[in-house]
Image (cartoon, rainbow, N blue to C red):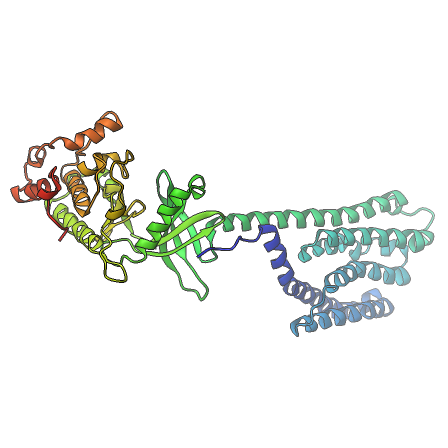
Length: 475
């Protein structure tokens, strides 16, 4: 499966904002119509105090505005949203304070109009345009409010002011107020810009954790020289969720043809390996130029981490159980056949504690088949050792063809370490470590007196130098 190149966060954000525009406009229309439905009857109730003439004019202005907003809300609910609505609605809402103070000018005079409540809330009305998430619209609302205020003042209110009007009603202060209205629009544009940028950054962060629209990455749970492993949630549409492990190839190796071949072989092989002691692979793909592998999540620890825990050595029964479970997995692997029933002669070639997972309920799972290979394709005489130098068989050290008994030798190395806490193959250098495979290890009972002769014999049988002296199969 090859995932298509994901869209850029900015483009996705713009598409989302475009699709969400009707809902946002409906919210604005709902709020403004609600304000109109409240202020209109209040204007009537204030009639005895402010005069019925002024009260009537306010109602005459507010009723059409409220009816318009209710009409817009009804159209949006019926799916008849249009792209012109945000602009017309925002500019109309911005003009309402100017209409109200014009009524005040007519009935109460210039001083009253220039100090009435609509002047105070005008800037807030301009800032409301931010809900449309449009920088241009917010700026246009600020410019419109500033221009309307200046036209209202110099064209109508200023000639009506008395000769000794308040200093706060002079041209200089009015100019400052108009500038503040413009600043409200600029502030709205800046706020809209910040919100859009932060939303894009959040989308980018989510996108970095979202793989192929169905996996969401959580914390890393493992890392190697060529790949990293994360706990992840498999969450396709429909609300279904399942915890999985995602193995993601490091960028350096995603363009390495040899490694990509190994990775694809691992995916192809593991998808066909169905066994309770083998980590199941469920999906494979390429996302953002990097290969990923979705695997069964084992809630527990790799064996090497368990062995490093500050506790006593594993009980003999636990080591015996561990060996039996891994032997079952290897027996299954070595006996696998193709669709025609022909033996595949598979060899894991990397059996070691980091690749053995132990769940909290005691399950033993063999993982990491990235270097698994068919024995028939093993090239004799190659000077390249596949696998970790501390966990190789004598055949691997000699660059000889391998079969399943090589994995059984590595099983012996793993059991020995699990039993004694001591690694068999050690050295100051890589060459010394590899050379130590030809040396006979210290008998486990000398490092741990409670080791039984039977268990020690099993381990030494597995660690026989001659493959013919080892058990023939994991079974």
